[in-house]
Length: 342
Image (cartoon, rainbow, N blue to C red):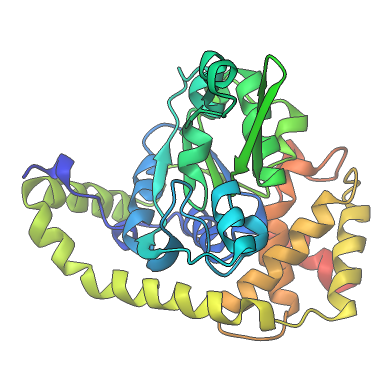
């Protein structure tokens, strides 16, 4: 096997802590709304996303084409729901969250799926050919160079991500299925940006640059060459770190719904958004949900001010309008001062 047959370990990536954190938080809490990673070429964006596959634990799922969650009947596909309502046994299996790739050349039919109109007219039954959104239900949908994707396709993706459902209608025949996924997009801003309306739909945004410290750059190169020369041995070196992080993520999921967020934290979120002149309320919601997830990741059941700081840095930069911060970059020191003053 060559290095192409192995996934570079997530924990072996040097630096890029904010990008790692944003991805991990979305695995713990898929309702965060995904993450957009913006940065120059060669900053390990794609490598980190692919490395997520090693951190995804097994889960129980219905034995159906949409691998529905057995514990959430309200999110069942039509077939599972029909069996559930009739009291019929729904077979289950073990599976795991996967990373589904969406190529930038994908057409709308390839993304949303197709309905066989001729078959429906002849038989009176709906015949649906699954698209990428159907494959992505309860998975991670990864779009590299999302800024080069057709705007209409991006709209479809973000609508499905927000609603958790993909609906398709052709010639008066309609079909819908669950499409709850974590949307992860990567892009190089030098090749064009996303419209502000689309940016706002991403829960978190991270801006990354290459390492500027010589020792870290050296370590990046050494690890990459070591991986390419002997990927199997390289991966063994990080087995324990990968396992530990995987277990930490699972523990975080188990306490997520128990995390308490005080009224003080809600007020901080509101005041931060007002101070930064942010439009709408999506920013406040994202900050709170992210802070709660950070607390769970740290093994705590109460949200602290430091969680609010980390959350604001991830959830607000792309939503700021006219602010005192230059180039839309939200520096931690400035937001920290803002929180301390509240």
